[in-house]
Image 1 (cartoon, one colour):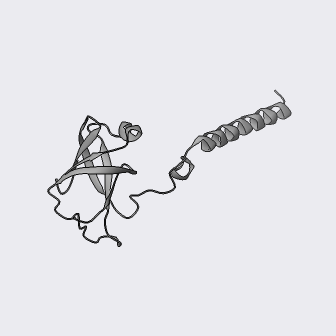
Image 2 (cartoon, rainbow, N blue to C red):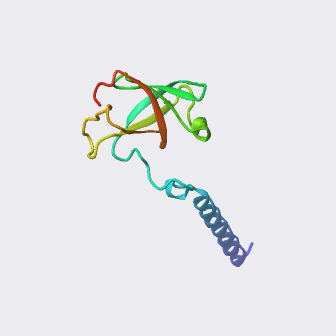
Image 3 (cartoon, rainbow, N blue to C red):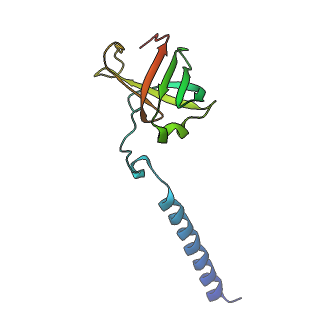
Length: 128
């Protein structure tokens, strides 16, 4: 095999690998690429929760650290985000600053797995 053919084949292999890497990188989706999602609602802190039940359109989760139980109802299209045994980040939006205590008697928003959900019941709200 001549040197020219060997260099040409090496060049083709490099071009092929470069094309594959670029294709894979172009197919990756970031949070900004997903339509309708512009930021994470969990950026300023969240509670890790274990999903206990998903039934009748409602979800019950258990906070890993505080053992607080939270029942909520996501929109129908968002219900498939929640599966028993999975971990879901939950964020209460009820104060202006990060790390401030929540007053759950006032209106607040509850985000679970980066979607707004309707809170139903909270048991054992230690630490909020």
